[in-house]
Amino acid sequence: MNTAPPRDSGELTFRDATDADVPALVELIQSAYRGDSSRTGWTTEADILQGQRIDPQGVRAVVENPGSRLLVVERDGGPVACCQLEHRGEAAYFGMFAVRPSLQGGGLGKLIIAEAERTARESWGVREMHMTVISVRDDLIAWYERRGYRRTGMMSPFPYGDERFGIPQRDDLAFELLVKDLPTD
Image (tube, rainbow, N blue to C red):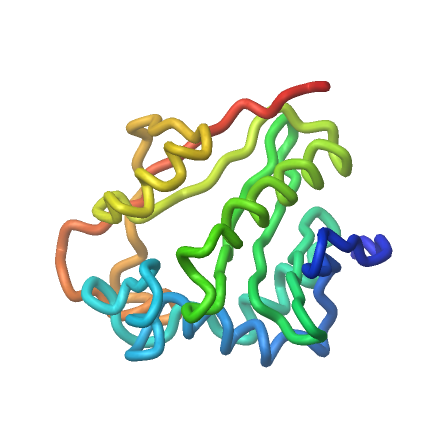
């Protein structure tokens, strides 16, 4: 696990998650995507997936993986966002991105993704950032495209039948790979 010191960016603090953060991060991720609380933000998946978004074991696996970092973004001492970075050769994988629903739409996501890209470049010297997004999430994909990500058309199946990822409300779900070239400055 990386034990880099916290990095302050204005009123936000970025740090690596620890095992002690797992319960709060599960709640944060769940609130951003599922259930009624997610509907106060724009990233909700509540109409296409019900049930859980992540479980404690899934968060803990990222925290404990030596090739990953789970960044916790705090404001006033409490978590307001998080994202996963995983080193995959020449690329980093970006995932588990969640912003507290009441704070969505105010530019926080833009700051966090920029910090995640910087962190991946500095930590691993990667040239690309990869992510997968549910292909029917046109609004979310458009947001990532405005940040420089491009659709690849490469799809992977949604894990139907595995309730750890939620209970699908439609039968046309798949993950699309999005890629962004990172500057080498």
